[in-house]
Image 1 (cartoon, rainbow, N blue to C red):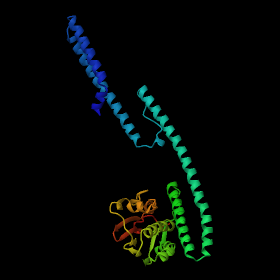
Image 2 (image 1 turned 45 degrees about the vertical axis):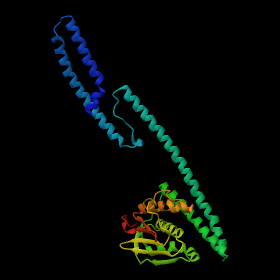
Image 3 (image 1 turned 180 degrees about the vertical axis):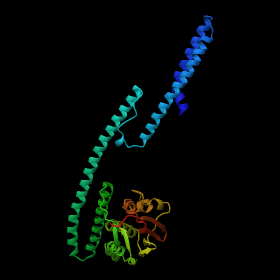
Image 4 (image 1 turned 45 degrees about the horizontal axis):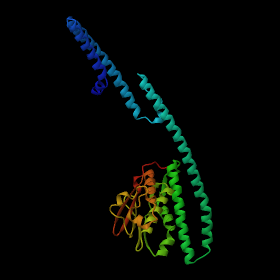
Length: 326
């Protein structure tokens, strides 16, 4: 920093020695003793070094104060070190005006985002009414077409629920209820929603969940399990799905589907990433597993994937929960 300081003050140093040289040349031209210039110049150099040292110390103190301000959010940035020059004061005013402009734009963006969330939340709740009405109408019929329409309607309900979960996660108003739940009850509720698809497509279900209690949120964990089952069913054409529990508390969902390409496996939990199979399917959004990871992270659970040509295994580590029981 001292070298940078000298480079910044090189003009003043050059001018000082230039004036000393002018006086020395003038004295020599008039045949005056050179010592009359060298002695005062030496005193001026010593005095200048002292002033430079004091100025450098003041500059370093200001630099440390500004470095401390770098880690502060613009919303908390109210004061600067006292300006030591007109230029510094002008820069501080520019920064203040930019902070005010940024704050105003952020407030406008927050308002627009809040309006958008309110609109889509209202839309998601309103569309549930015609969905429920169609479901009641279809329950009165028992035909291949009615069963197919019921399955399609269930998919629509899933997409609506996914949109609601996405909005809730980004809105900050998340209604977690963390306490002990019976894992078997949560998993069975999720599996029952896909019972018709298992039967229609003649897929095998191996279910092996012992009586064990876990600390989680029932609604959000159920959403994660439903998304995992939905993905497994989407890419499983024959065979079936196995749901089991590994020690010490890892829920496993195994399928006999087409699997995940090795180059896609590390990125399947990224937002919007569909991979090779998703691009082939043309219907994948890359949102389901992304939401699963975010929800599991918020609940303190871990979620991992393992895949080969024989299928895919999704593991949800429920033993990682550290929150206190409500």
